[in-house]
Length: 180
Image 1 (cartoon, rainbow, N blue to C red):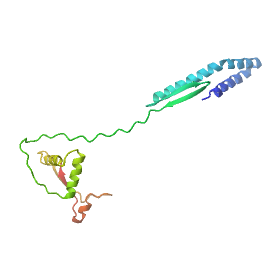
Image 2: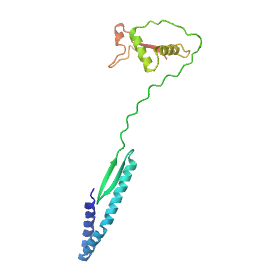
Image 3: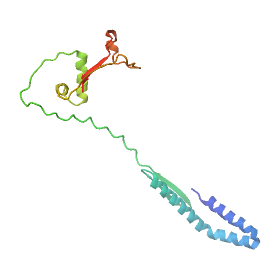
Image 4: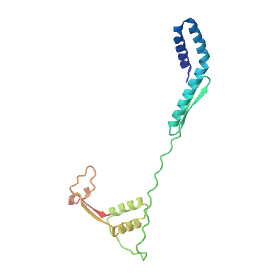
């Protein structure tokens, strides 16, 4: 940035103000303006440097520096490199539920539709568990003495867009059941 035009404007304004006092005062103002040239430059540089420091203080990262190159000012803007978006941590593993009975394990055979099994496997994988561990957790929750069996009739609720009960529409079944 060349500050010479600003110093020249200051010089012209000083000489113009002195013209009202006659030729002698005008000549004295011209000599004074040339003598003040270095001081005016230094004052402008200080003002610009302070402005850059205030801008730097307001920036969250990076800085603005002012450097003198010959008789010109050079602005250097340093921007912090963009940080990669933080990778969300994997879902936390559910807290281990202590077995009510540390006795023997029982084996059962469960027959469920293949589509239900596939969804259960997806839920178990999302929870970071095996299908067996996830199913034990579901059964444990359902058989907890504080569990609440929910059976809600949603036939009067209008669904816009996705209707989760579209597969059962032919039977007229729009119910939601489960354990809380």
